[in-house]
Image (cartoon, rainbow, N blue to C red):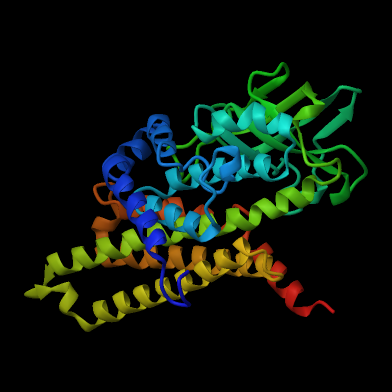
Length: 381
C-alpha cells in the first residue's frame, strides 16, 4: 500500500482489471452456472490470460509475482460476480505457489508451465475423512520404494476432485504427528488414482467437490515438494494465503449483496415511499457498510503482513479470515432480509450469495480453529 490508507496506482489498476473481467465474463453467467452445476472451465482458463493462474508464482518461474494484497484485490473483485468461481481460482493459485516456492527444479519445470496457463488445474489435498481440523493426524501413507513413493489413502472435500489434473497432496512418510508429513504432486491419470461421486452441496455448486482416492499410486521421487517431513509446514504456510483469499471472497460477495440491497431498497416502495427512506433501512445499510469496511481494512493489513513475512502474519491471517467470513455472511443475511420474500427467490442473486458464503467459515480452517490460533499466539510465553 502506498500509505496506511490507500492503494497504489498499480494496485488500483489490478483491481479494476479484475472488476472488468468479472463484469464481462463471470457476473452474467453465475446464476446459470449455479442452477445447472456448470463448471466454467473456459472462463477459468480465460482468467489465466490476465495472469490469474499464477498470481504469486514468481516471475522467474513465469508467474506474475504479485503480493498477497494484490491477490486479495483480485479475489474480492471476482467474488463480486461469483464467490465460488473466485475461490476455485484461489485454490489453484495456492497449489501452484506451493510448487514454485518449495519445489525443486524438476517438479517446477514439469508442472508450472501448464498450471500458469491453467491448461491443467490444481487441487490442494489436506483434509481426510477422519482428519479435518486435526490435520496433523492425516493417514494417507507414502512408502519409500527407492526411486518412487507408493501412496495409499484418501482425501475428502477436494475442490476440483475428478476434474482437475494435478493434486498437491499431504502424505505421511514418517512417524505420527506433523513432522512425519511430506508433500507430493500426484496426477489424475496415474494408475491407482480414482474419485468419489461429486458431492451435493448447499453452495459452491458450479465447482466439483469429491473424494480423491489413492490405491498404491506410484509417485516419482522428483514429485516431492520440499524435503521429507516439511509437508505440514508447507501446508500451513499455504493456508495463510488461502485464508486471506477466502476472506476476500467473502468481502466481494458481501459487497455485491450490499450493492444489490441499496438498489433494491431505493426501488421498492411500501406505505407510499421507498423502503430506503425508512430509518430502519438506513441503519441496517449503514451497519452493513461499516462492518464490511472494517473487515476489509483488517484483511488488507493481514495481506501486507503475509507478503512481508511479518512475525505475526499467521495470527493476522487467522483474525482476518475469521472476521471477514463472519462479517460477509452477516451482511448477506441482512441483504436477504431487506429484500424480503424476493431475497429468498432464485430470481435475485442474494440467495446464491448466502449459500456460497456459508462454507467460508468452515474451510481453510474453521473459524473455531482461527480463534484457537489467535488465542494461543497471544497467550503463549
